[in-house]
Amino acid sequence: MSSNTYLTKRVLPESRAEIEIECPAHISSIAPLADIERFPPLVYWLNNLDRQIFKQQASSADAAVVVDRISLQSVDVFKSGKIGFVKFAASARRMPENKSIPGVVFLRGGAVAVLLILRTSDRAKRHVLSFQDSDHVVLTVQPRIAVPDLDCAEIPAGMLDGQNGEFSGTAARELEEETGLVIGADELVELTDKGVHPSPGACDEFLRLFACEKYVSENELEAIKGKLSGLRDEGEFITLRLARMKDLCRETSDMKTLAALCLWDRLVSERIATCAE
Image 1 (cartoon, one colour):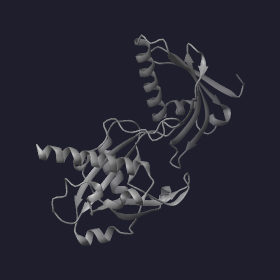
Image 2 (cartoon, helix red, strand yellow):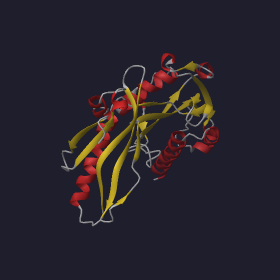
Image 3 (spheres, helix red, strand yellow):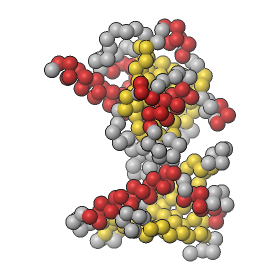
Image 4 (tube, helix red, strand yellow):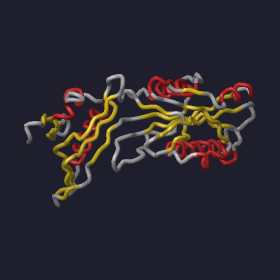
C-alpha cells in the first residue's frame, strides 16, 4: 500500500466478513475518509452486502462470492458540503473458481419519482388503461448532461436524503419542489414493493415509484403549462410540460417514467379485474 493511501478495516456485523476500505490521499483531501464511511448510500450498500454474505453462508450451495476490499476512486461534494456521489472498485471473486467478477460501483443512493395524473373532471377514469386515457401527466423538462439531453422530459423525482424509509413523504416534498403542487403523502399510491434498480451492473441507485390522481380545474391546468420550477440556486432549471397519458410512452425515453406507466397499467388492470368479479 502506498504511503499516500489510507486504509481502514470493517467487520460486517451479521456475516462477520472483513472488508478493507482503501482511500487515496487525493480523495481524502476532498472528503475525509470518516465522512465517506458515513455516506448513507455506502452504509446502505455495506449493510446489504452483509445480509447477502450471511444469506450465502447459510445456504448449502458450493458457489460463493467474496468481497474483501473496496478501493475508492472518486468522490463528489455538493455545494452544501454534503457528499453527493462516490465511485469505487470492489475486489470481488467467485469461488471456488477464484475468478474476478465486475466490481466497479457508482454510489448515489435511492430516489423517489411520481406519476402525477391530472384530471379536469370527475368522470370515471380510474379503470382506464394508459393508452386509452386522454388526461394529462406532469413532466419536468431540464438539461441532463449525462445523457446528454438538453430538454429531457421525465416524471418529477428526487434523491432520498439518507435511507430512512420515509418514501411517500419525500415523494410529496419533491413533487411540491418541482411542480409547486401540494400533494399529501396519503394521496400517493406506491407502485413498487421494494423499488427498482435502473442499472444494477454499475450503480446502486434504486427508485421507489408512486402515482397520484389529482383533479384540477381547466384554469389550474393551463397555469401549469410551461411553468418554471426547481431549486435554481442548486442548479435546477426545470420547466413543466403536460403530456397526454395516451401519448406518454412516445414523449420520453426516461426509464422511471416508462416503468411507472407500466406499473400503473398493472394497477388499473387489477382494479378492472376486481370490478368484474
